Amino acid sequence: MARTELCRDKPFDPSHPLNIRVKLKASDTGLSNTLTMPKELVEKNLFPWFSKHRCVKLSQHDSVQLVDLFEYDSKITTTLTMKKEKDGNFKFYGWNNILDQRKFKTGDIIGFWWDKFYDRLNFELLSSA
Image 1 (spheres, rainbow, N blue to C red):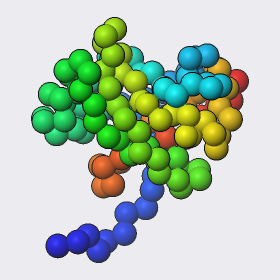
Image 2 (cartoon, rainbow, N blue to C red; image 1 turned 90 degrees about the vertical axis):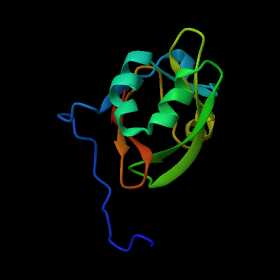
Image 3 (spheres, rainbow, N blue to C red; image 1 turned 45 degrees about the vertical axis):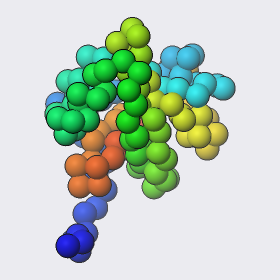
Image 4 (cartoon, rainbow, N blue to C red; image 1 turned 90 degrees about the horizontal axis):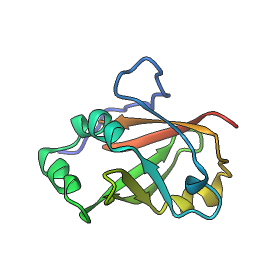
């Protein structure tokens, strides 16, 4: 049965223990195709929301999972590919599709939080460099 109730999008909550703040590096901006998130942040803050199957898959090197990223301000959802790299960190491939719309800069701080109702990763610019 389809969901009929309405669930309003909620903004970033800095006090929520599972929310993530990422300070963008040069490798995350400009002509970059990827956004890097440290292994510790992903496993501590995102894995609790994921199914066991998804966590096992993402723990394997070179295994990929599709993840919807929803920009809170523009209300635009973009599907990216999430992959664990050799160094253990996670990369979101397709980040350039978001950079094409939003001109994020090195040093910008982005907030990420999991939306369990819509099964997606929400994000918004918290502070500009």
